[in-house]
Length: 156
Image (tube, rainbow, N blue to C red; front, top):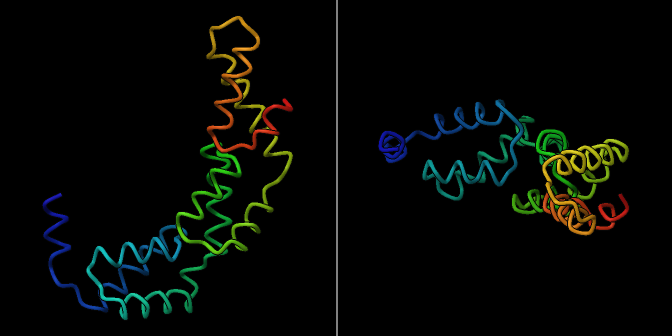
């Protein structure tokens, strides 16, 4: 941590910051929010932040639509998140609502349903209660906490 602080306190040239951002964005998809936060760590001023973000967008290193699609599929498949939780994560990164809607719409319905069913089976194995009402409520709370819509949970 101290080493990181000393690096961040050292003045970095604009060219070095730009190169770091090219590497940062080529490693994985990033949002403008993520890049801005990273640039603030380098104590870049507002005009420089704007200039770097514009350059990253112009050269194809930064694309909010691509980020939203990748984030959506990644969180669905890797973390088993539902639409609600994915949308919240995208909103936290200040992604435009139309881009969020498009990314959410791209989710395959059968894959989504299969993930819900997989989570239900997983949770049922962990519950030791015998009362069907308690079991159903525990499963529903778990699935809803993963960001799935309550009407889909209660249908199962």
